[in-house]
Image (tube, rainbow, N blue to C red; front, side, top):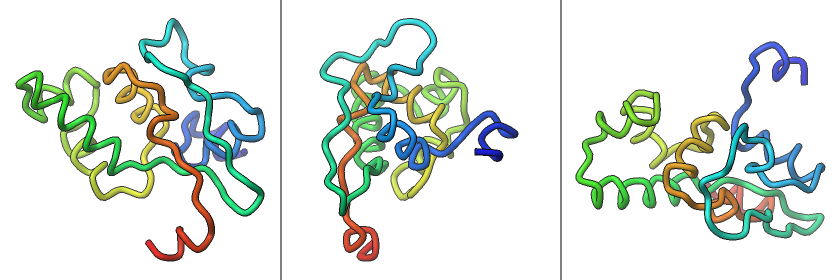
Length: 127
C-alpha cells in the first residue's frame, strides 16, 4: 500500500486484489459517470483462484474498434492520452496501469469485468 500511496497509481492486476476484497467493480472508482454499458460486476472466483485482466483480449477489442473507427494507433493514443506503444503493448502485456486499462474500457463503452477472469495458480504458471 505504501507504493500505491507514493505513486498514486497501481497496476490493473494489483488493483483487482483490492476490488475483490471490497467487492466493488473498477467503475465504482471512476470520477464522473461511466460510459460502460453492461454489468460491471466482477466475476466470481473461488478460494483457489484470483481475478486477472486478460490484456490481450482488451487489446483485441481495442484494435477492432480502432479499425472500425479508421484510426491509427497514434490518433487513438492521442485520444486516450498515452503513447501508441502503451496501447500496442497490451497485446503481449501481463500488466498495465489501472488508469490506462480504465481509459480503454471507457472508450470501448464496455465494463471492465468483460476483460477480467478468474485464474488458478496452475493457469498462471502455464503462461
